[in-house]
Length: 536
Image (cartoon, rainbow, N blue to C red; front, side, top):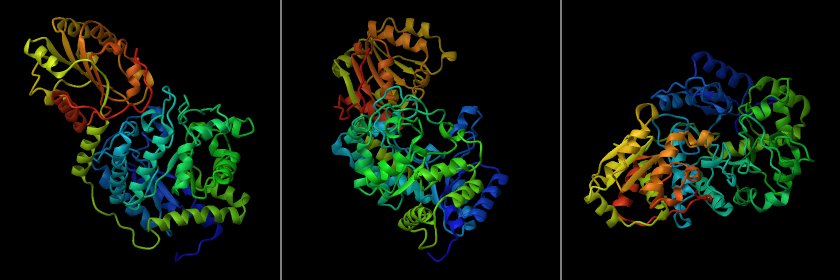
């Protein structure tokens, strides 16, 4: 490095406040002042204030802008020009920049990738690589992903589809592939949420989840992917806002603020000496603990975090750390941050945004993933029987939560050009009428496009739709293709009566076309359910 920093400036490097792509000029100027005054180490980008971390609960309208990607690039360049020490720009892009930025490539959720056979793990590597390239094109060198959480609680409100599944070994293998893909193109990764957020039923954005597992329990399951990550020199580990009393002298203290969990378990017992980053410090599980500004930032640093993500009290936090920490402890964290900046090359050369977005590559990759992850759950009917039902005019199609002009139906229409019905929204469809219209048909091909990825309110599926599905499953030969989170399957009454049930996971164009081709060619499915499902 060609610069000398005071102790106070070194502390500034620990702070990664949130910034927003669609912010006002007033807010941007405030961020620039923060960078200049406090020598902060990095920034964490979000789309807008209405959509970031805990802010979504305010129900403020999220305004979408088609030029968000260009705006992100411009802001990164602008903020870097203010920095004495090049900023490490981070973003949470688990399934690509599209998680935060409109009109950018989107890749499948982790639960979808978790359905891939282990023999196709290279596809997870390719996802990590392409996400890394997309981030670098915008000037971002640090992705706060992937999850190493083993999702073993179907009622988890916030992890679920973001986890590779409930098989700890597969989670570890796929997380490492994703990290390797990013690393090979010069982007840092992050395993989260240590010591494991999978078996929780509270959203840590809004409250504090408490895990009752013992250390032995965690070592057998939740900690396994993190241990594998440590063995493979993972760049960073994010600490989750969750309490594990057994690791913390019986106290319900968030892991983010727990020295026994970070210093004793992660550092000493597991031997990790890489970068430790807190989960967002504005999350309500920790943000309301202290009245004194800067106290939360100090407590998080004192517990063992090197990077304070989404820190809201930069000036006060710096003062608290300066007052309470030893120079040796400050240098430990500072040196870890410098090593990460050196690894991605931002200290050695001029920072440039490289390349551009490759939508064609993303689409080809999504097509390949769709081919291998589609999962046959039930299949008791062959395609010739479906063809005969179509010829005898005993076959109909029903699309739920998407128009019947969807790409799945369009693909199968070359072979099965049967009557089509749709319920894209309850206020535009009479469910009872459609149920009556379907009575003459013996076979029904149903495409269920699950409205939401999160399980709240039964994935936003209406009761009337569940009732309709239940009746059809009892009275018809139902061929069901589910585009969405597989945790929806146990919620559908009588689903075990389906003649065919194929789990497709994503509603992307590529996944719909692949599902249609699978149906009309009677191709085998290679995927396996990444979580245990019991059908009603």
